[in-house]
Length: 223
Ligand code: CDP
Image 1 (cartoon, helix red, strand yellow):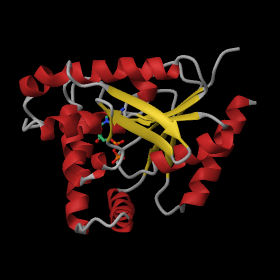
Image 2: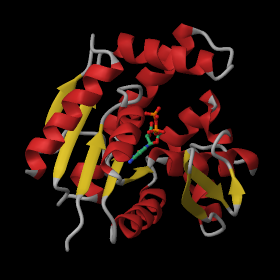
Image 3: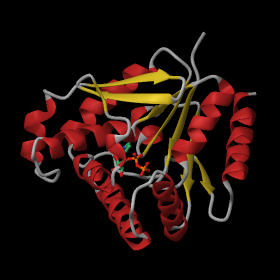
């Protein structure tokens, strides 16, 4: 039997990962967070003293980067050369660095290969920026989640506060704008809406509402 692929794309703070995780649980699908992979590459560069904008520097360490995704009862565990970096990749410095290394085609090709392999033999819901347009162009359902910059920054600010990070709302907003710009304007596999994607603007919706809407869309499509 063929497997089902659900692609969720959109900018930072649109609610992709929270919604995708919840839907995966409800449907019994595997959730794959591709952003975590770009974050792991950025973390490795930062830890090696390489500027995340230094294309040659980042390419030089690519062969020494081994990324794996495993799943335990708490969700996805991301391993960087065998080390669990699930928490280390969530800092603001790594967020910005991820957007920098994501511009580099060699980085993208390495990660896209892994993403396609992970998606090949199971029902999956995968989130990122280029899933519907590039990684899985034949996905059964493509959803593009978005919300206003102000709202996305507010959500991310609350999330970071909850996790115990000290950060300012203005800094978070700046980071989100920086990444929106970077992710949308890069030459290779930029953030954009796939022609056959359903656009969902979640501005003003709470999480519960958004999850219900996405679930309904998926049910209709899989009928
Ligand atoms: O969770 P958040 O939306 O803040 O970011 P993320 O999904 O963890 O992705 C971090 C960065 O990785 C993004 O800003 C993108 O630059 C990059 N990314 C990408 O280029 N392509 C993907 N499929 C996923 C992430």
